[in-house]
Amino acid sequence: MSRAQRLLDLIQILRRHRFPLTGQALALELGISVRTLYRDIGTLQEQGARIEGEPGLGYVLRPGFMLPPLMFSEEELEALVLGSRWVASRADSRLGSAARDALAKISAVLPVELRHSLDCSTLLVGPNAPGEEEGGQLPILRSAIRTERKIAITYLDLKGAESTRTVWPIALSFFDEVRVLVAWCELRQTFRNFRADRISSLSVSDERYPRGRQTILREWRAQEGIPAQ
Image (cartoon, rainbow, N blue to C red; front, side, top):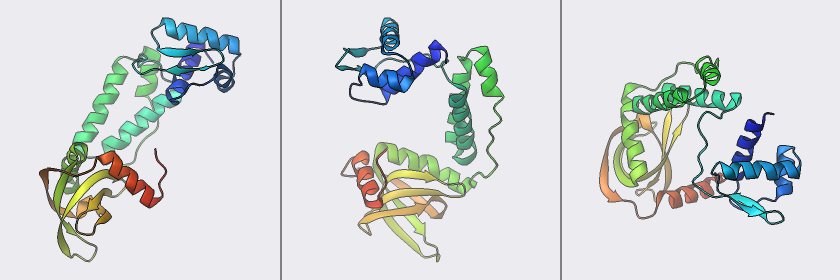
């Protein structure tokens, strides 16, 4: 492992933890000596990393330090390409365009050899894009989720029965063939999943739902037995 890669790995380890990690624990995870670890921490501090702590007490990385986006491993680049290609193929056109733009920005600041790896990635996503009608709803749903607004929807169930509901949208799940809105339903007084392609109409209210999205999302995860992320 190169020293540059080791320094990047050290930053990534520190970013994953909110509380101080001992020098011994960091050195063990990196597979280096404690003395080498202290040198690496000193190097990063000289480059502007806000690593606080001391031997015996542990080290923590304070927010605000940004590495240049050229320090990616081969697998990290593959993950970026595959994820961006999946979004471009499976999400609505606006989100797909944003994914392509983000990848282009990353590519623009990569060194030549890494840019070649990005451009020549052989990880592909098969065609299976959602229909135009469904895709047109998704930007509106995403905006309502971000702004924590109630929405009124007209929904068709599996039997074709139509109902009008007011819901609190909290998340969108992207599956290969369907997109599913997770929301609190005021009619049923519980969480419900709504397939986006079965929402025949929707309107976003000026009214925010009464609790924050993250709070409601935690409640939904607890109900479904989904571990917190």
